[in-house]
Image (cartoon, rainbow, N blue to C red):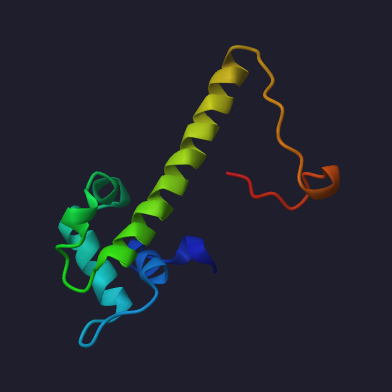
Amino acid sequence: MGAQSLTDAELLAIIISSGNPGLSAEEIGEEIVRCFGSFRGIARQSLETLMEIKGLKKVKAIRIAAALEMGRRIVEDVVEKKRADELGFKIQEPLGEYGSTEGKMSF
């Protein structure tokens, strides 16, 4: 069990954090997924379009956009590393605190 076991709506609810009177954060997340189909579909929307969802105001829309941007950057980094590996280049991984890579997340 962990984040990987959550539905897209549940992950969105965590990012949204709190609901509004009459709508829980999970219900807002479910509506977002219903409207746009997937994280990829959500990522293609403008903030204004996201804010058309009942219960989703600017701050919550920005939180979602920021989380999706983090995901996009991770994918970009992974693709860049894969391309470099295919071309025979070695990308130096940044060292963690005190020069260790221990405890880093991997994808």
